[in-house]
Length: 450
View 1: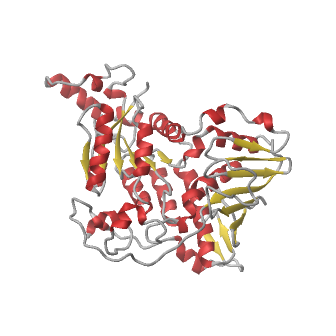
View 2: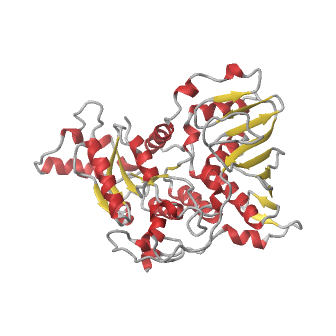
View 3: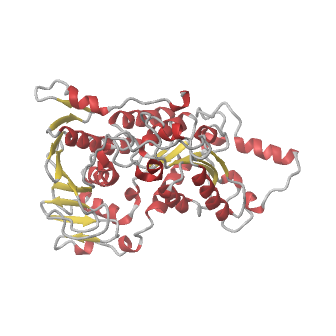
């Protein structure tokens, strides 16, 4: 297994080029000081990579979603989770128990301050799975600290954050993987292949499913703020505006509140489904130029004339409405051309128009449910190769920005023109649309300065 140049070559020109490799230092220390080292750390156990060949992983935010993704990462023989940061004491304990139980040790370190994880020179990469408000800020902090990042989506809470995040990773050269894992799942890959190979004819309509938009600006009733070790409320809020503590927020009830959420909840599913439509339309470097809010969907148009319909599903697990032929699980997408259509979702199956039945392979059904492992594997392989991931920061930026632009059109309840190159809204006369552009960013609080 090849070692990563940015860790082993002090002259590589990387952010860590001026320092000796941490693995070189560890090897020297091992020779100089007799010590007991577990056989697992030396890679003597079957299927376990030697310490010098393993990617060391830190975790920032370990709620239910993180435990799902981390659970897919832990079995990788070339990855070792060594640290967890979370502002909640209960979650720190649960995360440590999960990791230590997997390795059969008591070695996983926990902290409530993510900066302790980011400042550790022995950590190569981080999994960021906080709430939406922290994803972008934590990812940029990690990149500046020389870490590669797997970030849950939505990766940026505004258009401005998505832009700055992508620019940060381009400048620092760090590897980034957005948690839009369907880019790595066979049935979705196969559906995009049908579009790219011309099997659907000329594409004209793309359907992306999303939750019904939701926006709340009220506050839950104030409750006594817990001790900082129990829950560091100031850091939980992070870049978001201050408001009084309420336990429902930290238990997951923050969703739908504008201060904490991304794009009126359109990015909950839209970050996945719009991303797949972008991919099918070969639009990873651009986005729609018009957003037209309708009662049950957002109608978007690309410069090439392809129409994107972001369909609001009031009952995501029930009736799908007229745009969908089948029920194929959550996050369905549908691509329609003048010669046929394809529809697929999280259940792993794929439905196609008559004549395309032979284009649906059995593998796309058998591999359903392995989404987190496939996407994580792509990330760690790219950490080693230094290649772009399936859902790089540049790819994430365009799809997320399209979702945010749709959300702004929904909030303003009017048709918006958009320039994907400058990521700005334009008035009908071509001048900047100041009202829409004002919603492309939000004030950010520096919680560490409080």
